[in-house]
Amino acid sequence: MHPVARSRSVQCPTEMPRTAARLEEAEDAMGARRIARLARVVEGTYVSAMPNPDPQSPPPPTTVLVVDDEDGIRQALDRFLTRLGYRVLQAASGAEALDRQAAEQPEVMLSDIRMPNMSGVELVPKALAADSDLAIIMLTAIDEPRTAIECLKLGAYDYLIKPVDLDELEMSLQSGLRQRQLEIDRRELEQWLAREVAVRTRDLEERTTVVEDIALAALAAAGDWPGASDAVEKLAKEFGTSPDDVRREIRKRRGAAG
View 1 (spheres, rainbow, N blue to C red):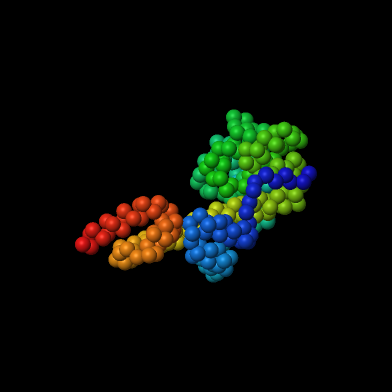
View 2 (view 1 turned 135 degrees about the vertical axis):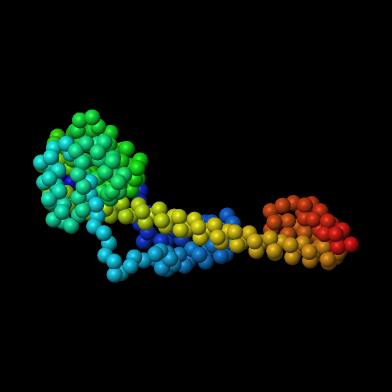
């Protein structure tokens, strides 16, 4: 049986043109040329902006939590996954799985569906509530499409039929981990972009305030001249306000200067 991937829309961090387009839309909303420049350089900036791991410190092995009420199945999966280089944890029940998840924070969970007290279907939302990035692969001895679909809708990544084909399990693990990393990268990218936009928006607002002050001061100092009315109209349009508001501000500044 082929692994069934959960349907989740994932934006790969390498699809930077879409992100750049989003920032260029922000330019229209805020009138910010600097935001447009940010969009053009984001592709080259993101990789260098993200922290790089220490090249001399190898990453820790991926941790897989095996949840099954049958000891023989847990031990067999433990041996196989250990040979593949994974760090393996075991739990004989859903409650124990949640305790081990809280203590060890695994990246992947392999869970039986039919277990006493707490089924795999009940375990999925509880485990994802604790870690939304957890890749969950369900294992079942019976081909139950309805139950499998329910697990996938709840957020499980895949489900496999027992006895598990080990090659299929290895591929599902690798695919689930890739999906998990894409989700993490997407979220980190969105957070980074939000911070960059906030900084540049704040800078733009500060600069805009300075420009508005200079323009109003210049009109107030110029007094009445043939082009004053047109200048007020243009300034009001730029400020997003009415000409009367601009005229009142000019009169106020003239009064303060007098």
